Amino acid sequence: MQELTPYLNPAWGDGPDSLFSRVARAAVMATHRECDNRVCRMVSFVYGSGRPALWSHANLNEDTHDWLRGEFGKVPMSFFAQMAACVKAGDSSRCPRGQG
Ligand SMILES: [Zn+2]
Image 1: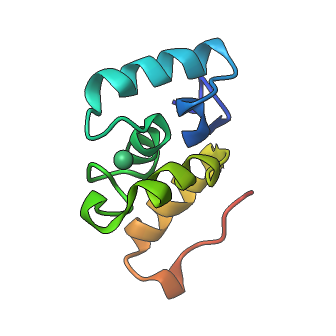
Image 2: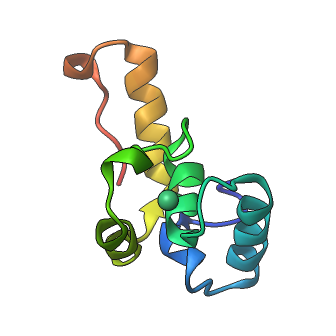
């Protein structure tokens, strides 16, 4: 995917800024139907497993669920390479330093 974009951004749920982001958002909206908050659904895609990935809807009230729309930004593709290196190392204290 890094051939197509230098970053992913959950905020694309409310405001895609390129052709790639519009296509990515459409794909996520078609496959992540866990709620009506498009940023929340993009978070599930960007940050991995779970629908949603970072919280349980049962633990969020409506105000908090709506508030999170403004709390996410660009995630450089180097983040995913770094996380993969950490998983491969198997121990965060042995996690190799990233390039970004
Ligand atoms: Zn949600």
